[in-house]
Length: 309
Image 1 (cartoon, rainbow, N blue to C red):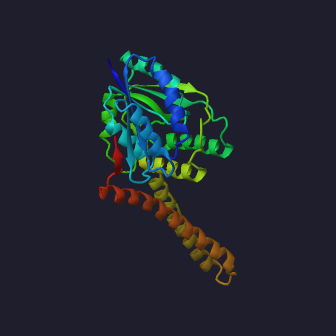
Image 2 (image 1 turned 60 degrees about the vertical axis):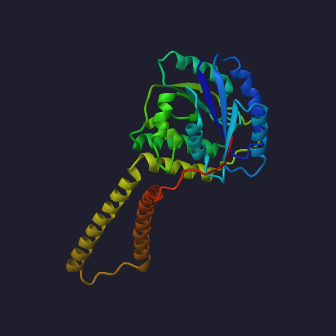
Image 3 (image 1 turned 135 degrees about the vertical axis):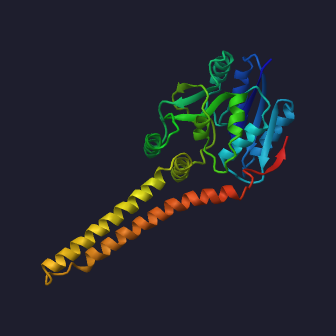
């Protein structure tokens, strides 16, 4: 009998964990496979760890958990879960039930055919979410698909079931700065996506605000595209050419009309601020890439485990 491992990252989800486990158990009982759960407590500051201990005590053979020493982020939690699992197939899903457990049997059946290596999911709408967040999400996928060689499916979720071969390939990527959506796409393999409409959280509230999502998106762009560096180069080149043209115009104007009036300080200050702003922008973009290199070469662990059962 095949074994399915389910990785469930958790951060301040004490209310959602019992609801998730009950709902998922009803579904997995219909699957002809062994099931194991790996809950990853990402440094929660509520009673998440207490709830995970309760689940483990009730079913120590099937329910396991890893608790980090602090909050390392969802990407680290996914990576830790993939390292810990022992199943032939591995599913990754959120605990808030926005990833419908009802898809698990279908995912398993599709993988069993041998035609696919991964069954992913994508939301076809973001009903119930803020318009600004939805707009930023749609814009992110348009932009990154324009500037990256890695293909990103719009609305794709981390919720997916993968073969052991694909999981092993993902684990070979040891990068410190991890963007799972990009990593899952970059490793390739035959992937089929199941579509569904947005589902509201079963309990609690999301810890992701618009600013955090923006930073996460920019991190993904920096991890899978060199376009920002190219923009910095083109911007610097354009400013340099424009300054040369301006210098030529000033010199020609001086010889043609030596007594002409000098432009005011306002225009001069605006030009200085413009060039200075472009320089700082380019330095900032380059600094982001250097920062990622700096974090990588220090070889710090992606996460630290405080408790594991």
